[in-house]
Amino acid sequence: MTTSEPTYAGPVVHAPHILIPGSLKFGKKCLECGGVHDRAGCGIGSRNHGEESGMPSYVVKAELRDPHAKMFVFACMKTMYGGRKIAVGDQVFVFASETEGGQGLVARGLVTKAEAVRKPHGVVRWTPRGSIEVKRTALAKRALGREQLKAWRNVKDGSAQAELDFKFYRQATNKIGGISDAAAAFLRTCF
Image (cartoon, rainbow, N blue to C red):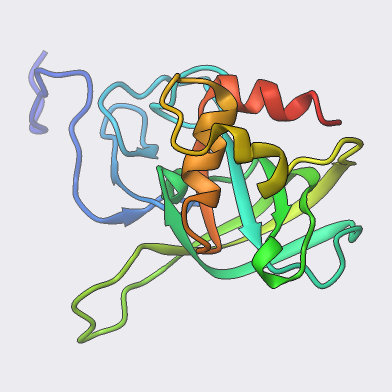
């Protein structure tokens, strides 16, 4: 069979700098499936091309005007610990920032919209940022915040509590951050 188009040896060939729809990350166009993702191997049929199976989980720590709202909008939030990979359909645990008068864990929800915020021209130091909208699916039934996680401060035992304390309470920064499956499972016990 003769063709004028080039053939590709690997499973995925990428072109640079395409914003992944419904995501805060920039990826590459997959010439195999036509999708856009940020890893080799397209994983056609999975929720996000190239992502591992399972539902990615994130924590948002921010000032909340109404912790019982059915929808939360977080604009231009810093992303840390893999938070820039958040996408539509991902699970989010919402913490009302205690440094802003909040009470810690208040809700769980699903991302309904995610957009990357571009680095402003001329800015040298920039933490990646994104804006997301979250539909609340549950309200927390058990308190979890700075006080409850204090016992895990500076603990390096790999526990979910130590991870949450390190990522979200070591510094007061409001942020979107990725969490491990173990941390997500622990947070689900609060609902």
